Length: 490
Ligand SMILES: [Zn+2]
Image (cartoon, rainbow, N blue to C red; front, side, top):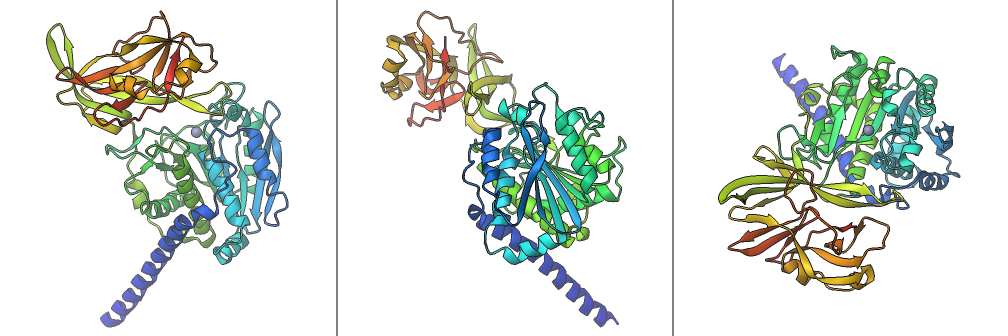
């Protein structure tokens, strides 16, 4: 009897291991072969609504992908509905209900390529599309996207309109939910790039959530399914981004769509694309999204998630905000002949260009003091370094063209953060020149305080070691330059 038990237990373990291996195998294959599915026409995250329409047009002759009009935004921009598959299990997915959260829209274009192209996944895709039908809305908020901002043209956060359902974009989402009654739904967003996984130093690259459907955060069958699926996705993605998966806050929000989808009977998975070092166009986050979505669909089709425990989900650490883009530790600052040791947290905030289709950085001092409980994407131990105010290069230039052609590096080497120009008649507030340009005689503040543009010097034995220009460091000792752009101060 015991022998039989062990025999069956062994077989069971082998089967379970086999299943786990199979899934790991699929995620590894998706990871390795991802480049074959990248939708190359869109590689910058600030693409417009018309860029997306052109992209979707490339699938107009597809035999697999059906694209129709779901409706129109407040300003009359078309919102598309993509249908793939013929299976009984309906799955909904939507992206960019917040206009400046475009990572998942790019991943969804990769998903279309994945299904459309001939590749080694053909048998798997056939199996999946016989079992599920996908209903996808890429870019639910095109008016917000046009301005590359969260809210729509009327300054409404569409994710707070699930109760009143007043705005056309929200009505589209609700209508498709009612028509398809999806068993699962993917709600796809971008979150801050500076969340950490719990109290760790690791950035939250992907954050998941199985939203609550009431204030008590009860777990019913619908919510449990979301948790099980997230457990599976977490295990799989951990291979590629170990320690970089977090959980979004699970406070019940009665006005949000995710929470209401659960109420309406769909197992909802919130996926938030977070941060990854120097991944400004979010290509790596896009890849992680793509893998998560394909694995999720496969799991729903084959009901793999049913074997998962919710323990893995429960143990995912929550998002914390403990990261700066640049953290300088143990800086010496002098005041009235006294010396103090401080840390300086700097964020390199992205700002849209005037047409919103590109961006530049404004580096701001975010916090000063004891920041020993925080972390930085980049950190510098400044023990023995004294901070001093930024300097203006004494030589003046006539205009932008004159300064464009000079070598800035020797000026940085001498510790300057600003160059004076008589007349700066250019439209944008930044330039790719790695130093700030300031109109001659214009006042500028060089005070080292919270909220100010981060420009200063770090000295040792009265010699400049580092120059900070617009929140980025230039290493005088090695000549290493990390300055992404300078500002134009008029
Ligand atoms: Zn969002």
